[in-house]
Structures are given as structure tokens and as C-alpha cells.
Image (cartoon, rainbow, N blue to C red; front, side, top):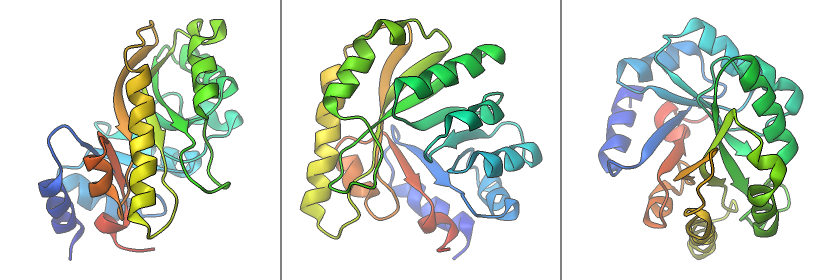
Amino acid sequence: MSIQSNLNTIKATLPEYVTLVAVSKTKPVSDLMQAYEAGQRIFGENKIQEMTEKWEQMPKDIQWHMIGHVQSNKVKFMAPYVTLIHGVDSLKLLQEINKQALKNNRIIDCLLQIYIAGEESKFGLDEKELSELLTSVEFRELKNIRILGLMGMATFTEDQNQIKKEFTHLKTIFDSIKTLKTVNCDLNTISMGMSGDYQLAIECGSTMVRIGSSIFGGR
């Protein structure tokens, strides 16, 4: 199967309101360009250096999403161009993104990562931390970021019931904060679901899915 036909097959299954992020980490620019030729404009990378190299080489109408864990000291490298940062899990990181966005005269869109999995290895805020963050004075001072919604990763398991429970939990948290209107909050996005579970994620309320291997093939 070609990258193009994989993409078309997946897009045919997605509702119109769901955004497809093609997870292109570790893939060569030639693969990304095949997806680009097939009409894909949103790519997700998990390493800032790799993403920046691809951004430099590829057409400028691409939206680049940072989907990996972000180290504060690397934010400056993607601040000039990144479209959306998925995995923001602390006020400190938000403050750094805000600072670098200001330097680049931009407002950078972010998703707050919520910890929903049963695994300790995942990053994210819990509900209490989320609430404290969103209501803090420090958060409201950040004028160069905009929170578009939440992101979460389910446990890596075959147990569909557990995955569904975790996705539903994220949707419930989103619903509890979505009426929050501040200058730097415009909550409309729930990023959850990957190649193996994106259809279940959409059933549970996802509006953005991150799909890699089903488009580009395995590692």
C-alpha cells in the first residue's frame, strides 16, 4: 500500500470535524512529501531538532505539531514556526513557550496534557493540577500562548474497556472546563487516539487524532 492510499483510506473514515495529524517522526522527508502530495498539511513530530530540519526543507504551508515531551530549553528552536504544541504539562513550560512566542512576535497554540493512563511512564497533569493551573494568576498573565484544549494518551493495552474509560475520562475533564473563557483559552480540541485506537477515541469525543504507522507503515 502506498502512503497516498493509506492516507485516503484513513481520511475516508474520519468525520469532518476530526483533524488528522500525520505522525511523521523518524520518517524521511521523501515520505512526508508523498503525504503532502496527497493533500496532507499537518504533521506531528516528537523531536524538536528533527522537526526543525524538516520544516526548513519542506513547503511552508505545512502545520507542524509538536507531539512529544517538550524540554524547556528546546522551545526556542521551534518557536518561530510551530503550529501546535500537544504535550504541555506544567506552568513552567507554558511560561517558557510564552517567552519564546513573545520574542517571535507570535501567539503559540498549546494543548494541556492530562494524565489519564494506568501507566506511570506517561506525562501529564491531574485534574487538581489542571484546575490550579487554569485559575492561577500566573497563567492569566501569559498573553502569547493560547490553550486550545486537552491531550491525553491511553494506556498501552489490548483492553478496549480500559482505553474507552480513559478516553471518556478525558472528555469529561474537557467538558468540565470548556466554558472557561479567558484571553488565552479557546477550548475546542481534544487530542486523543492513535493508529490502534483512533476510532474508539472519536466515539469518545476526540476531535484530533495522531496517526503514524497506519499512514507511513511500521518503523
